[in-house]
Image (cartoon, rainbow, N blue to C red; front, side, top):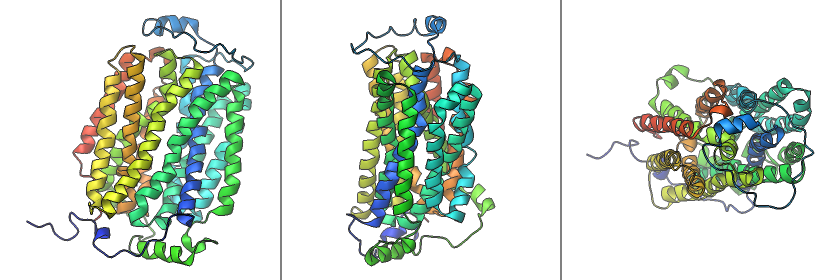
Length: 464
């Protein structure tokens, strides 16, 4: 039996599309590149503490004997260059370090849904710009807060989370007005790939700064770069093609004509239909499943490298960055492949989103669980974590973009809110370095498998 109209095919591929405008030097791709650098800084500001904290805290020799000495042997140093030891050291126990690392997410969860609402009121440009600006300012204040006391540091990190919480809803709000449907995967993958690139650069660079300079410069350098980016963002970006000062007439008409049937004019959020919608809950479960692993590794991978695999600060930074370099490459390539399959090979958007989501969910889960059973084989441990995180990049062209496919005006902020629950739950348990054992690593990743199986029983959203 032939499927009914709109049941299995993507409407975008049935109707004639407006003539495209070259990508080179276009306003929409300039926006993607500037957003890419913005998210680069966003994640650099987020993860730098994970590496710096290793250098900020005095070694706990009693803990080391009880926890790590019977797991993996310590590595011999690979460098003869003396490290800088002038940075202030703090006597924070493992529970305190858990609260410090988790405090970012206490602020982050608060501004997820308000971020989507504010973007619709004041525009994504201002919201994203000032979100990163505020995070940069508080990053500059981090060394001062650490000297004042752990409570001040926790408060500053929570305020950074408040600033970053609005950024993804703000960016998605802008793309709902800027991204032509058949370029959606390309544009969003370019802009959000900056997050992985920021992690790739920030982790090893933070390790080098701590090793050769002083941990305080980790926060000063990245904070200053964030403020510099803010000036360019405010000067060069507009919320919509209609308000952009230098966009060509051809590009403006191309974007507007391709989106004319995409955006809803409904102002209020239809809460009752949304809460009863399987597509919405599929997005929520997909976010929850992927982010459980992503945020756990993003924040705690340097600690795993130090406490379990016993790498020093310099090796730690470089090896912790490898998985995100692979993920960055995968995000860029998967975005190009996804739009090629839809535009040139006539694959339905539903099919592409499902396939990319499955690859980005099942692949990481398999390799992460395997990483928990290989003992102290350092090469395999790093390789499995790298492959796992790399495959997760397919999700960017899967469920992560599906918000714009089915309801660009309202769904993003709600899916993001649920996606932040995993890291919050992790730190509400006051993650303790005393209990960071290989067995715990296995257990944590088994949760990801469970979530993936749940997500697989729910139909991935369709466009119609």
